[in-house]
Length: 439
Ligand code: HSE
Image (tube, protein in one colour):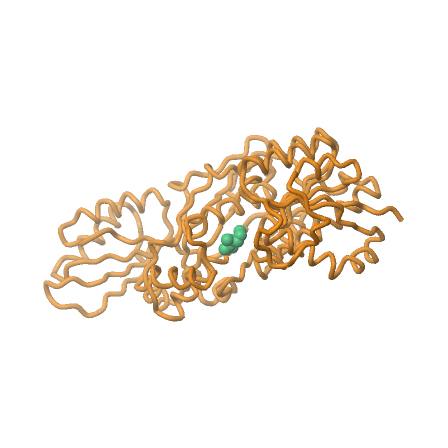
């Protein structure tokens, strides 16, 4: 039985989590796959950087090159994050023909094409289960479990911080700012929260899933993104009255393309969405993640779990480690390729052409003719209104007006709302949140 030696770059939260998990379950893993795995070296930022699990000093080095170039190191993990030095680290290891395991969604999302091409050129593999949804085995499921399916729909709650904030806003009737502040104090949100609350972390993850599902690389710039900062307690409350919960959803939907899937046209977007309370994703609360996948052969499937944290992420790294070790020892590097571009000319549909239903909240003057004027703008744009809520107001005072709209292209609704905003009976900016019916 050949032993496989692991060289790790990164000994912080995730890196020390992997060290701990291997100590805990390394023997079990070896007995399952028939290959013992030994950590040979761990490159760290500083010997005494804060880490949840301690690492023996004898394993640590400050020089990542020593890890990558060590001839005894068979597999390299990149667990440092960022897109500059991490890219060099991954490319260096791949250039030496060593399989790399990464948890780095930002790096993959921006440079996936280049990295997978480098892996192929050097006849090795890049493994990335930990990059999307931590402990949920969604990469393996799409790559292997659903290899015989066209993925027609994928809906993901892929950012734990946003889900935590939205859950508390709903349960407590609280505003975004207050919950964010408390989430930061409790360590559920970063001091600089933009990556999470403005949707960019979800954008990286959804881009990786879209690329894997549809066979062409979907870079972040092609993905429409809206975060959750603009969601208010009023939106939560009225959505609740209408039977919906607001979630930040990553959405990937195949559009009819007429080429039998050879040149897929897909919607890839991240935005706050009204989810019917009867749908299972409405019940995914706090920091949990979930991914709902519909394949043309398998039908509907659901994955649920922790999307972040040292242990959940370590579980994903160990899964990749087992695959990498087996692929190395059995000489099956291309058993199931990590990412194969298989679709030519795939395109991402611009958000203006994406069709959905809508929740609209306006602040209007309660006077005769208000509703008629607003309805006329929607009517002229061929946009149907499916329901209206207006709490009892005071003649001449301002009052919320909530409308649910039938399916229409985003562009048409945005144009209509621009006209509505200019009406003298409308105060402030209209709020528009898309509604998903999961059809
Ligand atoms: N910050 C992310 C989240 C985890 O809140 O889900 C890492 O991607």
